[in-house]
Image (cartoon, rainbow, N blue to C red; front, side):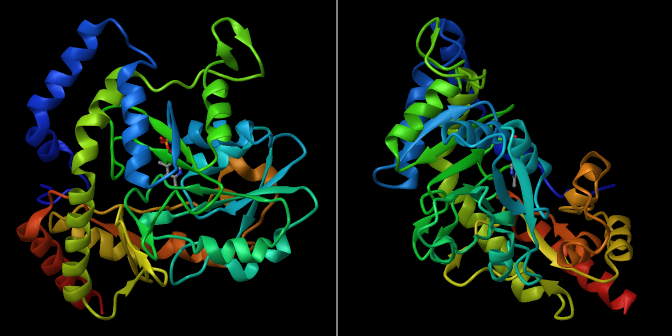
Amino acid sequence: MTAVPVFDYGEQYRSIATEIGDAMTQVLTSGQLVLGPQVARFEKSFASYLGEGVSCAGVNSGTDALVVLLMAMGIGPGHEVITVSNTAVPTVSAIRLAGATPVFCDVDPRTALMDLGQLEQHITPSTRAVIAVHLFGNMVDIPALRRLLGDRSIRIIEDCAQSHGARLNGQMAGTLGDASAFSFYPTKNLGAYGDGGLCASHDEKLIAECKKVRMYGFEQTYCSVREGLNSRLDELQAAVLNVKLPHLADWVNRRREIATWYDESLPGQLQRMVPNQGVDHAYHLYVVRSSQRDRLRAALSSMGVGTGIHYPHPIHRMPGYEWMGMGEGSLPVTEMLAREVLSLPMYPELGRERAQLVIDAVNRAVSELS
Ligand SMILES: *Cc1c(COP(=O)(O)O)cnc(C)c1O
């Protein structure tokens, strides 16, 4: 029996079930099912959540948010986009879907984020963008990245699929680069009950372009002013997100509280991922590192504690990405992390009692293994 699953959305749903039901009924009786008032309202609310002067375009997923941004920026075939292999596959799928070529930079072992010290060697005349992935809810130092890129015309896109609510020196994740992509996949810090995503930027024109791209390139119906695709956010998911958004700040704070308990009470010999300087971590995931990861995971499982691995296979070593020709050892830190990382249960409703079960189980497992 799993006493503490690694993720559980049931408790949160029960706490807002009536509001969700009402919002869904309202959509179903309105007769408007895609790109209607719920989407418009959510785009506005999420923009104000992010901060002043931000514009947003709702799309069908986090993957699509990246694709739509790249297309709206005119980045495609013949262009290179630098990112990391230590991310969720969709970061890379998006670059390929836009027709561009992914280039991988290795990560920093302390943070699991892009190692900015290694960035320069990957920049070529074809580089058009860097997708900085704010993995686990931690954040890449975007101002430092900007300084490194200097006056080269290379765009910075923040992949915020795991960092809703994170801040760097008080500024929200998703407002520091040229644009940002959010996912509302059910497990994310803000999750729909299906797929959803969003493009955000201070550049209003870029977001206007995203709104064309997401609907076949239409400005007005039935005439494409550019090429696009179908990536609409539907009204039912937007209605869910409108109900949930007012809770997001509280939910992220509860994640931070759980992280504090873990920080204080997990065994000292277990390595933690370190928040970057100045970052208010959003704790989408709480990740530790162990050279005996698989044994630790099995021990926890036998004690009823579910865990996850984010991620067990570096993208450049997956069969689907063999064509990149990147052998074993080409990104040593990324490959080491794939062997050592372990994600502990983390969701706002976890609560003190279950967190304590996790803490006790990890302490017992670590002392038995050493
Ligand atoms: C979830 C995720 C995405 C993609 O989001 P989808 O909505 O599943 O398409 C992109 N990047 C990262 C880092 C993610 O975790």
